[in-house]
Image (tube, rainbow, N blue to C red; front, top):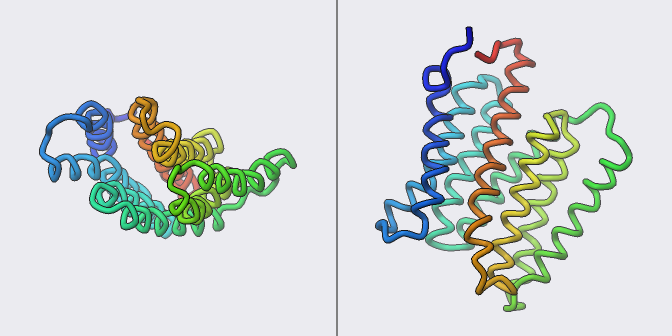
Length: 221
């Protein structure tokens, strides 16, 4: 019989607790430093979950991806560039992980989607900010983001979990960039950025960990 999630995956449960609750407190008057760590805890516990559940080298890689995501979540509240730097390191680790798990056969349409994803994402990111001095930096960051998502989409990990999760990450960041442009007076980013990002990260880590455990012939209770 499967054990309850609170017994077998406590760190996943803690992540959900912080991730869901953060959405409701992020615009509150909660003290900034506490709110920053609250935000970081959501993906931080996903890193701990990956580290504890997948014991091979790839498990350490996905834990690292989540750890740098958590650092990015916190640092972005202090400095946008510092946060972006942490995320870029995480994207590079993710690209390395996905390159080690290539799909044996990928349909032409899926390959074409992955190829087009990179320039389209970069162009959208470049075109969004009203302050054109920020455009090049956003496009450069989005290169790493889009390559990560393209590699996830064409990896051997479950496409409708890891691939979709990576695409949700891309859309979330594009909403952040849109907040610097035509959506700067809109409530849409406030309602979409965190849910898309957190659910995307959740799908990625659970999809990767589950696959790695199957490859190691470890049951998933």
